[in-house]
Length: 144
Image (cartoon, rainbow, N blue to C red; front, side, top):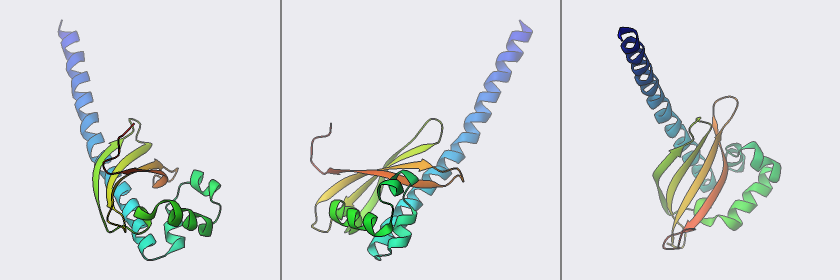
């Protein structure tokens, strides 16, 4: 009985230590993801194509192989992201393995319309996060 108790106590302590170690890492990842999103939005506001493009994931850069095409796509299809009136970060979801993050951003478009932008970010080999997609949902629109 004693060995089983010791083993169970060891497992419980190990699990607790692992969870404590993961909590700050997830907090750091969430902060890093927010910084990437905020930096890209600020680059759009400054018409800084090179900086805005630098936050795009390789999968996006394959579709839009140069910053001019990328910038035009954002200007045409993502006006609330390109020229937000203001924005605030909402809920965030971290993938179990830490390889991806989905960050909700509440954005007011240039026309005053409110949107929810769901940013999908993926961890790169160097540990940084890059944006690999944004889903726009108009406020008040039914969600599927």
